[in-house]
Amino acid sequence: MSLADVMQPAIKHASRGYRATPYLHECIRDGASVMLKDKAISAIYLPHGTPLKAGERVVQSEYAETLSYISEHGEGALYGGPLGDILVDYMEKHGGFITSRDLAAVESVERLPIRADYRGWEILGPPLPAASGIHITEMLNILEGYDIKASGFGTSETIHLLAEVLKIAFADRAAASGDPHYVNVPVERLTSKDYARERRRAIDVNRAQKWGAGVAQLESAHTTHMTAADAFGNVVATTQTINNLFGAKILIPGLGTIPNNYMNLFDPRPGHALSLAPGKRVTTSMSPVMALRDGKLTFALGLPGGKRIFPSAMQALINLIDHGMSLQEAVEAPRVWTEGNALEVEQAIPEDVRAKLRALGHDVVEMSTVGGGMNAIQFHDDGTLSGAACWRADGTPVALAGGLAHAGVRFGLR
Image 1 (cartoon, rainbow, N blue to C red):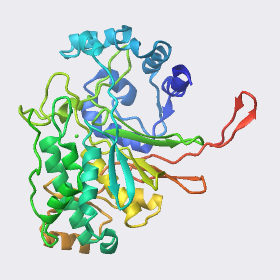
Image 2 (cartoon, rainbow, N blue to C red):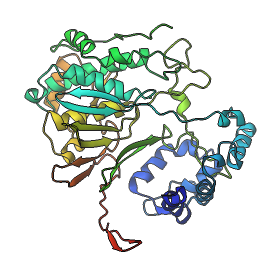
Image 3 (cartoon, rainbow, N blue to C red):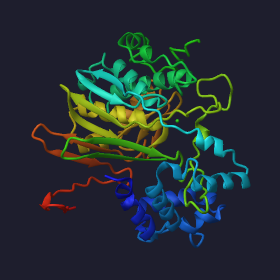
């Protein structure tokens, strides 16, 4: 399909508008105090000084024009083209740092996925500079040494193990993850079964611990996820982000685009794996993942949620593989998260389990949600597909069916 055809639905929705959902209303409300400082973004999302209500239309006419121009002229419209000039001019007038030279230097880098073997399942995750694929593999390797199925879902025993491997993974992430052009990340060691055994031996099943990194650099960190599949066997798990809700919370007039605020995921201190450097690509926790059994794709999933993304994706995989949950159960099941301080648990975790976790030494904090709305697809042996989306956001599974009514005409049911 041509770029223009692929982009046409987005152009239509930006131009004609779409109805705000209750979830979008909440997102606007949460960012309103900062967004009100920028007239351009406020005009769309807070037109009368108050957040758009559910059911009101979100119209982005300037953005529609930008998308239309890109659909006609391709990536050169921004990188070295007139849209780039608008961006650079805005930066110059408002104290920004992006120049024409920066835009001209942008290039995509393709890398092979990280592959994990967990109880006979092959798990595919994102490569560097994303930290998620490596550390999902690391955590699964450690957990493989325990009978998670026997300890049960949502028990203090299982949650304790999850908390300990999360702390291990985040300690290693801080020490040695990032752009491989700048950081010599010890990928083979972090993803090895031997390293998992080393870390597993140090876990105390009866007591929470503080963890430091087990690796170092070799010498020489709000989001949308979609999982899609078609009848031809093509499958896409894609996570898109501009970091926090509404990114930098400004809108560039003339483009209608909202810049990201991903710079805040860099470490402001020099000399660290995630320290800021010119041309350096920031790490990310985005975790579109796929799970294969006997070489056949069985699950594809992902979610938003910042640092809570890859721990949540890992827990969904355990729900499916170890606990035998259905797809809907797996994406909706209560989650936990920690990177070394408080242990966040969702409200559905029973109080008696929380009490046992406190007795093990965990600082338990109740949260309404851990991570964002997950969606997933399951591929069955009979060729059918199942879709699932969870309650934490307003995502939904949608199936389109139909075929050729006659030559050159397609129709679909929703």
